[in-house]
Image (cartoon, rainbow, N blue to C red):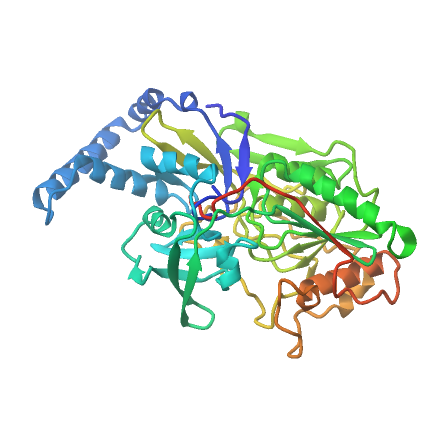
Length: 483
């Protein structure tokens, strides 16, 4: 069984409601013919298979005959397919033809939405992360919030797809979301206006002589936009003390992922040689490995990568590659731990199956599935210790972590001495975080200290406001999607 080589990592689809970190590999309908699958099933354990299929038919007959109101065969079979695929792991799912069409339309950005990454969890809708600059982020919705009501009506009896449809709508229309915040137990209501979200995939700024580059998702042309931002930072740095860049901070916090080719390209920009990532699945012919091509656009500048619990999939591939090659210091919080690959398999005109088909591994051969990447210098975002209350390991029926390098991780010997003096969280006097005020970003401020120490800069000026800011423009996207 062979699949096409186009892969995505991270949120399944960014549109009406971006939902959940994942890794997606695209396959054509001809790659997975149903007739061949049926022959394969009938060949193995045929008597048991026939018995179970007969049981399925019997249960359908009972439901059709006795349920409180008439139910169509289509609804019953779709429900069975939902359970068949959806209960395998949190990232596999079956999409009807209508849902598959909606997914493809969402990618074009024709729906209005709020700018959320969400994940189905035990029948509930949980926020993975709000997207920078969107209605949800501006309103104050946080990672880990459970969405319980849309427009003051409960969504507890709705599927994830149905809940997403409730949240989508025309740009400019009003919507109210009620959430439960697990850390405090409080119920909060947010009134927002839907809009077509222009996701700014690359943001950059210059702090003294330190370049700051934030990647919000691994979308089309991300690496090119990042390269442009880096070149502009180099030009701006000629006016900074010393006349040149002395280090780079790569911010992957709350970045749920995106396309694999972009993750590989970004890592390749900082690593001269060696493995970047590999994927291994059930079928050996689909295993792949990607290596660096010999270019470091920074010419060896010190790098600090910022991560948190919202850094998933493609973000973890980049962070893992830079960490394993000792090319960067990882500062922040443990990442999400999404280490599986999904294949999107269209089933003719009947919809599609999003199926987990492989795990991916860092250059040291480790699977981060359910584990995440541990920072070299742990620093919490807030005084709450860990703002991200859940990760892949907290989801139901997750994929097991097997294969690869199982030895204990060897402590790095190249961590700069300043790491010992970096506090693990802000103290009580630290101001509340304000996205418009870099001085309130505790992790960023610690990263600047580390970069300056690595570059041999003593007593740098306070990094309170950027000397310059570079923004990459992107095509419009509707803010919600799901998988």
